[in-house]
Length: 252
Image 1 (cartoon, one colour):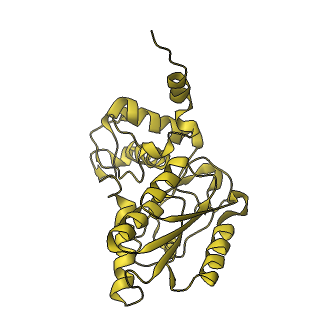
Image 2: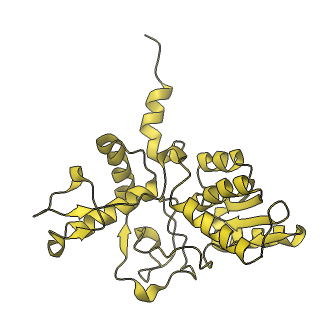
Image 3: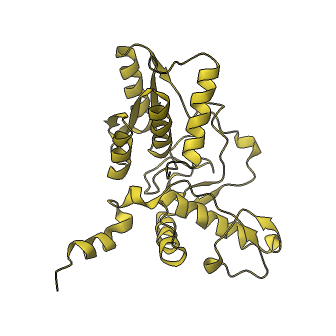
């Protein structure tokens, strides 16, 4: 199923690790997590299959599709004011746990069972590159802080991607490659292309790129891992023009 992707593997690892340590019990423990949506969806999928109730807290600005998928999996969803940032969702999660017995906070940003991820962040919130947190439109990345699970000392490089770059690439993935990807997937592809086009990477097996976008001086083998799917963004600015066209269609 489509929820079986990176976020599902993260969710599986975190829940399985907690079970093996005797920290949680199906049918008894209530799992709690804060998320921008993708990891939460993975957790909701695993939780529903393994007999856990799940409470998700996320900023209100993330797409309607994410909310619907979370609810479809049976998760209890709480929205916070996005202006309050990461501190706002953490505070809300803590309030819920204080009032709810038998809860367990998964803490994806601090959980060692969550694999390390590096490399791509919004240009408007480039905290990994030493910049300041800020507002951006690349849902799923760029939380505006450095997660405790991320060891910055082993980062070789961080690529910054603008909103426009991510949106344009996401549209091209759909039109040219038949891949209905999410905005963060577009951002990942932009970063992969920037790296693969460097002269020193010609002829190397590299992270990856899609053939229709490469204009390299030599062959480069590449692979991109897409963190999200496009159907979670149909109500966002990404699909504005298509949505307006479809809504205005008339019977002929």
